[in-house]
Image 1 (cartoon, rainbow, N blue to C red):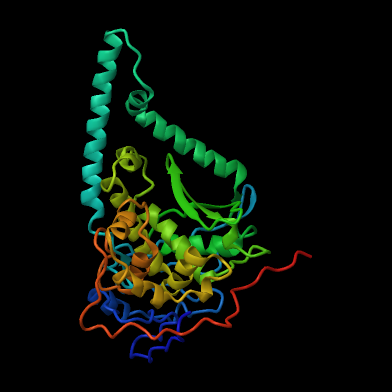
Image 2 (image 1 turned 45 degrees about the horizontal axis):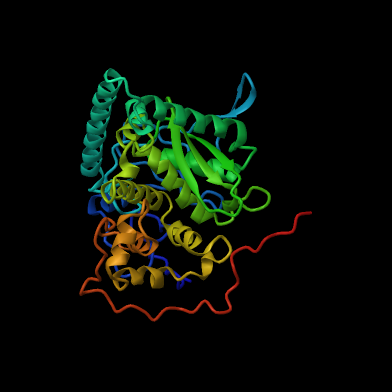
Length: 391
């Protein structure tokens, strides 16, 4: 459970942020991004209770002012269809603050180059081995065949996954899960994407998850149904906005590209290196989620830690502080072999916005930071939105 946040005072030339920065002991933000954001004029896009996190246009932008909020509609060949929002400013400063474009984790590209080289080498060795075996009249094993035909395998699996979404998933639209649909539209505009990805709701069966992928020139986001409440409303709107920003961030950062996924074909089989590349991509996507709706980070992490009903009973600061004290070889190897950063390290990174998330070594508390605790008790707190009865 988080202590109540204090609202920042009104600054000259800039309206009060309806979503103030998270509490905690490290609040460093990108100086360039903050200085640019201070020049925003929100008179054209006043915050509303329905869509309060409206990004503001950057001054001097060559792009037209974007439309954020309820999508306008136009008459098309199949009736009424939403009109995509205007293109937002593209060259915004990069940083780890909620302002500007989100930063890419510094380990992502170096690790991607290494994994792509290993994948290319493995495929060349597989081709040579298959040729030798065929010339000797022997049958290549299944692993060599999969490596040789990796481009077709990746293309086929991506096509099957997308087809499954198209025929089984509930496609978000202004009439189906409109709140989630609007969050996807706003996230795509926030990251300067020219096209809004498709978004689907799939049966969660109690699981909390979401993912992003694509096929051909199409990109899509899938959100498990347990993140929604009966009636299609978001169970935790801020947390869902963070999660959708995270998944749309995967698309904006190029993580769903066919060529990238082909280059990462052997990553799941590479201990430490492959999983570290995937973790760095998750940190990059977390930066997107934070820049899209930073106040949703505690709720999203609490949901991943304790589920959709008990997420508000999770002390974000208390759990994040454990990242610096939980130590040992098995803690290290648990993170190193994981495809996602362990939750304590991930929460630490979302709170300490002065640096990127730790990939290999646990974070350490700065000497200037105040001592950890005391933490507010969640005893007697009511869980978030208990289940509703079906009429």
